[in-house]
Amino acid sequence: MNCGLLGEKLTHSFSPYIHSMLGTYDYRLYEVSPDSLCAFFQKTDFQGLNVTIPYKKSVIPYCKHLSPEAKKVGAVNTILKKADGSMIGHNTDYFGFRYMANRSGLNFYKKKVLVLGSGGAANTVCAVLDELGSDTVVVSRTGENNYDNLYLHKDAKIIVNTTPVGMYPNTLHRPLSLSGFPDLEGVLDLIYNPSNTMLLQQAESRGLVALNGLWMLAAQAKESAEWFTNSAISDDVISDIHRKIQAKTENIVLIGMPGSGKSTVGKALARLLCKDFADTDELIVQKEGRSIPDIFSQKGEAYFRDAEARVIQEISKAASTVIATGGGCVTVEENLPVLKQNGTVIWLKRDILDLATDGRPISQSVDLNDLYAKRAPIYQRFCDFSVLNDASAEEVAIRIQKLLLQEVKDENPDH
Ligand code: NAP
Image (cartoon, protein in one colour):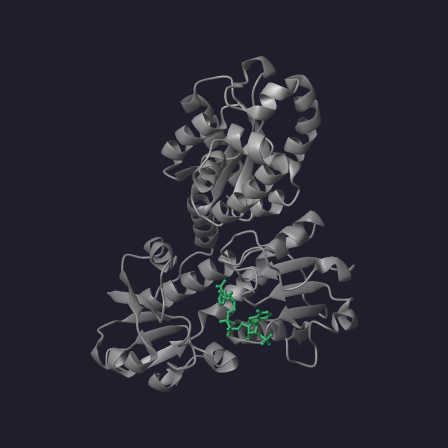
C-alpha cells in the first residue's frame, strides 16, 4: 500500500517515523509546488495521503466526498483513494486536537478559552471547542479581540496557541505573557518544535497544565493510519509515539561545577544514546578564535558570559544533542528557559577534591568550596535531576540513561 505526506516543504517531517510505528504501508514524502498540484493527483499512485501546509484547503476540489469533520473544519488533511480512483477527504487534526484536549484533563465546558491565531489550525481547534461546549474567544492580530485588548479576557481559564510564534527557529518568542491571566488552568500549544516553548515553560512555572502539539500530531497520525488500513488502532499507541519522539529528539544538557566531567561524560552519553555532542566552551573558543583563559584575561567575564549566552541560544535549538555547558552558565538566569526548550537538564555532581582545574580561570582564582556553596542551590534549581560522577564516564552515562527512562515512565503513568 502506498501512502505519504503531501506538502510544499517537508524537511524535518516526523511523519515517516510516526507512520512506521503505525502500520506496514510505504510512507513517502511528496514535496509539490502549488502549480504542480493538479499533475500530482493525475500521475501519482497512492492509496492514502496526509496533507499539510499549504494544501489543506486546495485539495478539497479533488475530493468526491468529505467526512463530517472535514466539512465542519473546511479543511482536509487525510485523503483516501477508493478502488474506482475517487477520493474521500477527511480531517484527522480534529481527532488530534480533541485527543490533546482530553489528554490535558482540563474541563472545557462553559470555560472561557482563548484561541491565539485565526488560521487553519485555529479553525480545527474552534470546531472541537464548540463540540466541548467552551466559551471560545479567537485572538487575532487584526480582529476585534486582539493583543492590545487582552485585559477584556483576564478571566480566561485556558489558552490554546495556534500561532507559529515560538516555533523553531524563533524559539525565544511567545505570543503573549500569561501574567495577565490569574484564573488560568492550562495552556495547550500546537507547536511541537521546540517541545517546551517559552509559553509552555511559563505555564509550567505557574504549576498549570501544559501540553505541546506532539500529542495532536501523534493522535492525528493514528486516526490517519486507521483510515489507511481500515482497522482500529488503540489510543495507547499515541503515548508510545509521543514518548519515542521526545526521547529521540530531546537534548540532554549537563550542568555542574567546572571540572566535574561534563564533557567526558557527555561524549559517553552521546555515544550511548546515539545523539550528537556539543560542548559550549569549545563552541565559544571556535567562535572567538582564542582560548577561554585568553577570553577571560583579555575581555573579562561579562564578555565571556555574553558570548556563552549566544552560543547556548544557538545550540539549544538543536535536536538530539548532548550539550556539555560551562560551569558558570547558570549564573545567567536567562540561560535556563533557553536550555530547557528542548532539553532535560542534568546536574553532574562530583566530589570537590576530584574537580579538574586545568585551563579553568574561575576554578584557579577562587576557593572551590566557596564557589560550590554559591552555585549548588542554582544547579539544584536549574536541573531536572542530578547524577553523581564517581565512576567511569560509561558507567555514569548508563546511570543517566536509566534515570531518563524512569523520568519518561513517571510522565506517562498509563505505561
Ligand atoms: P496559519 O494558517 O498560517 O495560521 C497561523 C495564524 O497565526 C495566522 O492566521 C495568524 O493569525 C497567526 N500568526 C501568524 N504569525 C503571527 C505572528 N507573528 N504573531 C502573532 N500571530 C501570528 O498556520 P496553521 O496551519 O494554522 O498552523 C499554525 C501553527 O499550528 C503552526 O505552528 C503549526 O505547526 C501548528 N500546527 C500543529 C499541528 C499539530 O498537529 N500539532 C497541526 C496543525 C498546525 P492572525 O492573523 O489572526 O493573528
